[in-house]
Structures are given as C-alpha cells and as structure tokens.
Length: 180
Image 1: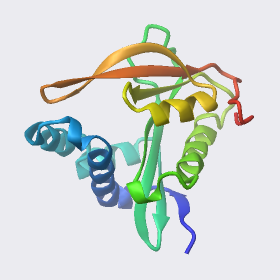
Image 2: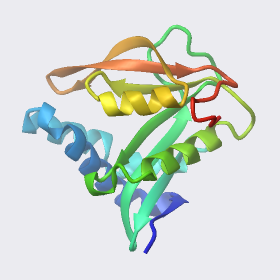
Image 3: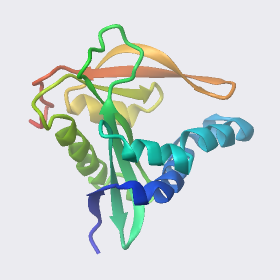
Image 4: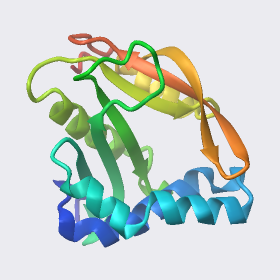
C-alpha cells in the first residue's frame, strides 16, 4: 500500500507524540546522555504539547502514514528562530522527520512540499528552517529548495548545546528544482 499524507488533527496528539519522540531519537538520540534525551522528549513531545500545537490556528502538522501507521511528520508555523531579520509574517518549517526505513524514497520531499504549500497559502513569504550543523543531507536537501545559511544558534538538550544553522529562503524564491 502506497503511503499517504494527511493533515493531523487534535485526535492525532498521541500518535504525533510517539512518532516525534521516535523519529527524533532515531535521528539524534546518539548525541545526548539518556537522562537529557528523556527529559527533552518528555517536555518537547508530550501529548499535551502536541495537542496545543495541533489546536493552534497558526500551526499545521502533516502525517505520513503507511498501512495505517504514522511513519513521518512535518510541522510548520510562524518563525520562532533567533535571528534579527525574522519579521512578522515569516514562516518556519519546524519539523520534518521520517522513520529511517522511509527515508530516501521521496516521502520527505512530499511532506516538505505539503508544509511549504501551507506556509505560502496566502502568497509568497520569507521562510526559515533550523537544522543541525552536522546534518549534511538535510542541508543539501534544503539548499536544493533555495534555502541559504544566514545564521547560527544553540539547540539545547539538557547539558548539550548543539550547533544549529539558521536557513532562509526569501519570499518568491524557488529551489534549483523549480519548486516554490
């Protein structure tokens, strides 16, 4: 059965909580002491926190489902990155994660497109993404879609301070593949 993408609703808070924790752990769990990782997951991906995000009119989340199981997600909303040029109305891709077994099959690109289309539903606007400095694959992917490194910040997980890149794509810009 071919995976499908759908917009998540409040009833998906538990699913999103479990999926977000699992995908983050698969991608980055090796970077953190277990105690710090568990505290971060409990706070950042709690069911209640996902419920708040899913219920907020300025945010949207999409689920990638295969055979009835959520295997990936993307989240978007107003930009909250610490950069002096962030302006009101700018949008941010907040999360884009897939289970490892669903990566490199084009599904991340489909989730990405869903989020960007939603962010630009009222017309072009400046878009932002925060990405770990060590995630070269994600950086190449975002660069193909017109995002450029414009700043840095620290992403804190317990005692660990990750070096993160801030990427930006100006309103109306397109990627090398022609996507807007």
